[in-house]
Image (cartoon, rainbow, N blue to C red; front, side, top):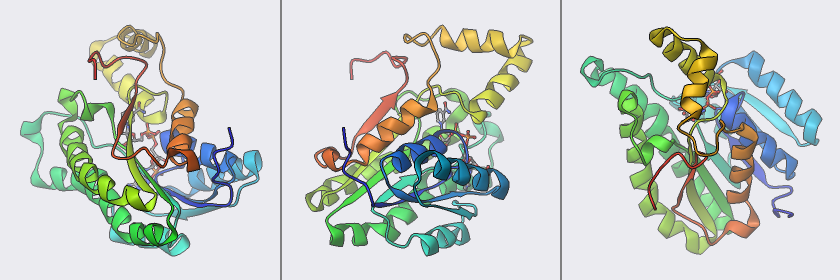
Length: 259
Ligand code: NAP
């Protein structure tokens, strides 16, 4: 299916690795010209080169921390009026809420709630004027089923989800949609690191830890970031203009509820 977004401009945040990278690759395959961001220059430049080589799309790499005003200003300087915005940033640290300080909470809110809201604020009106806009926020399965050690993530992402739920109903009449993609368990650097830490804690191998996690996924496997990227590309497509304010869980059936 031609997704009808060839030649559109996309800003994909936190995209040198993992799910952000997969979203960027999927959009580039559809002919979207991209600005991608991350903090580390080397990995970001390498990813930009790989996406260019694989797709022929124009890809500009902008280094910076998207959780800061400076990082967002740099991204927007390279892509002031994107047609497509994919909001993403690293997730907050795990732990016990008794140990988290006010600064820990503010960092989580900055990265996983306020940065996406600021970027939506900066780009939404130009999308409305163009009568086309697609905004996708990468959040987490923790929004639907909280993960106890990820309280910072549960809280910050719930705040973003609540805000988006209201705004998404106001923008859709202008063909500007806002949706959230909720990853379950995907094979990325972050998950590999988390799993290695959990394996160490339990005194088992990383491979055994992975098998233990997979046992709880009805699909019987971990998600491939490319699958996530393809879902993102659909939500950014010309055909998805009737879909807004939704929370799409990609978790191989792990969430057990009817809705
Ligand atoms: P990942 O493999 O660690 O990749 C994270 C990417 O984001 C890297 O390119 C990283 O590059 C960039 N990044 C992180 N913080 C940034 C910041 N403040 N500003 C700019 N770039 C930043 O992580 P992932 O697994 O793709 O996860 C992406 C998001 O999905 C995270 O919020 C994570 O919590 C959430 N999530 C993932 C899963 C999963 O199964 N993978 C499950 C639930 C939720 P630099 O470090 O160089 O900046």
